[in-house]
Image (cartoon, rainbow, N blue to C red; front, side, top):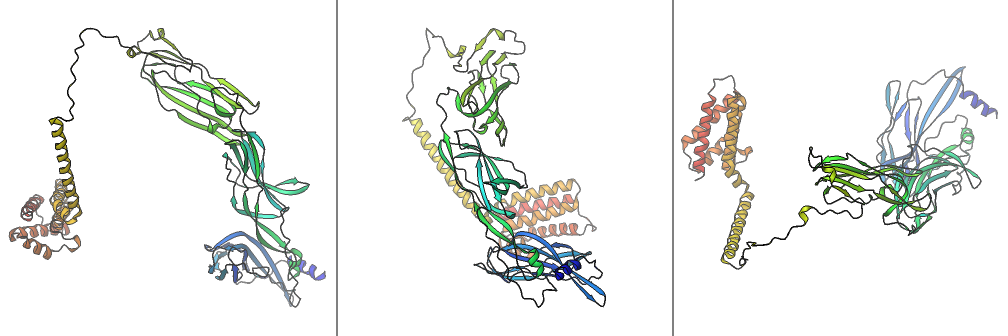
Length: 613
């Protein structure tokens, strides 16, 4: 007891002396199993800002867990206090082999220090690390004392940690919603979880309920026992069919921090050591009973379940023929909004109708999916008059009263004028009831014509005549000639050298045209450069010589083999020399650009005549 009080006393003695040298070391077990938790510990004798290296072959499960230890020496009334700071991470290796943990860095007093590198052998099976995996803290009073046996942590049972799916309804109608909440219950210290596998929810339409980014623990009593409970995820579910539907289990891995009693020193025995373990938990499967909807619904029911309101809106009630009008149909409320089809809306034949634009404006909450769904119809009347389109009928199953309900919209009336000066459009009124809309215009019935009809005799069919044979044979010949020409073109294009040879004159003329533009703008540098490119490019394409191998000697040799006169070759080289000299020595005596241009055009023309023979 006296020794323990001495330890507490010396811990709180103010520091008089610090070591000037910074010692920064890293430690870990030399051999671990793949996916086995182990401690990576960094020890430094001064506090600073630690940054780990690139851990591409490792997964950090938890940390850093920071701590410090102090040793005090009193020699000749001089007090020396040494403080050691530790940063402990819980780590897993992701693959087997000889892996390397790179050095970490720490900033202390404006200077950066690096730790040592750690080599770890990772094997397939877990390896016993002998309790604490990191470097043990130095305890000056534990020397010469027999080390005590470390006590194993208690096993985590299903009563200590479990996950469960709660539903607010176990029996409901098809199309009615229920809320599913995934909840975690724990009596142990959880520092995180991973590999969360949600249920597949087969047989349901699902809507996610937005959750806060941070999971909050709340105290909750379950079967007379106190737990820390946290809501992980919430869903809104809509059954797609009737019968008994199961909700599959969810699964997640929890990272749990445990305190191990018993250690090698009195401090370890008093405060305990910590380790992180992984436990996989799985929720039980639950079943939902889904009943069919009653069959006493009306003709307008299309599967809407919930509590809804219906409204309509017409962009304008008076317009001119061939002008567009927008008719908006909006259903708002709470229920299976995403699965609702637009109410039956029938237009007369005099209206050109486009597909509606659908706008969804709803969100999932714990009370269900609430908001609105809007259909915007664009129609164009093609005939004048006053059109009373009647009312729209919408039928749904009310989940509150468990009965079918029918709601009606306001009457839809549209007045269509022939033109802006038409004042008699109101005399023709068309009334509709949204069931049998029809209209017969003046052009639908024609009077029977009597007298001489001036009918022509039916001519002989074209098939089998000489004209048909001529057209058939002619078409066949045209097609065959097209195929032959096409195949020849493809063959020619496959010969790259031949294609370049044929297009050489065309490409050079384009370049000379560009050079002429530079000449007109008095841009001498670009003019000479473009003339050089035109001449060398023409020779490369026409003679089949690659640009990288294009040299004077080779060009002269190729031209002479094609019986080109020496006069033309001399003119060619003379023009190239002038352009290069003017381009690379702009301060020299200049030759008129018009003369260079004319000579280059004349050379290309002469070469084209000689080389195409």
